[in-house]
Length: 184
Ligand code: HEM
Image 1 (tube, rainbow, N blue to C red):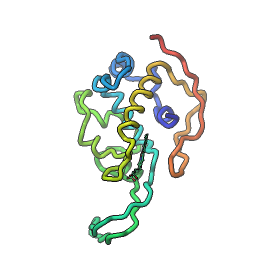
Image 2: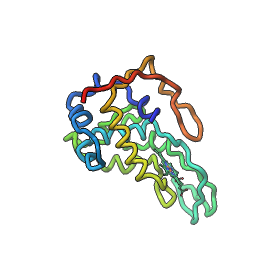
Image 3: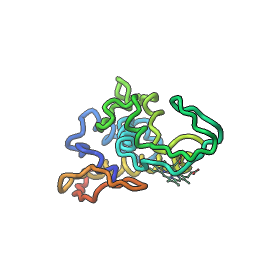
């Protein structure tokens, strides 16, 4: 959640686009059934997970049959490391991938999630060994993140440094915020 809040430059309520306040503020989140009514909130969560991907490189995996990758044979039993960071930054489906832009997940109507972009967003990895906790994590991210940004305005007390602290799990440098309770 520290990374979520720090990854949201200009996301404090005063600078939220007005049409998006309807989604983020007006829908009081209590249940997962509120999620379909909050496409922009969903788009923000996807974009934080893409832009500030937490797990840059996976642990080792092994291919169980020979495969060709861009003309290179990878023989059975090779130790392979997937670089999620690279995929989430370099896949051509993400225009200007270093920019934080939740709108990339929305179609022109601003309400429908663009599935073609979403299916290339793989912070939980893909395949048989992908994250077992993906469903739980997605639920927690939606409920906790929405509740926090609805109940409080997060005002940084100094400029937030978005440079990731590298490690097995990426974190954000420490920062402090003032939390201003929002009127119900
Ligand atoms: C935002 C939160 C989370 C992210 C981004 C995340 C991401 C990942 C990633 C990238 C992998 C590696 C998959 C691979 O090697 O292909 C993984 C594995 C795993 N995750 Fe998560 N995860 C999250 C939350 C959780 C939660 C809440 C749980 C448990 C309740 C969980 C349980 C696991 C387990 C057990 C594995 C190992 C799966 C295997 O090796 O077969 N994760 N996760």
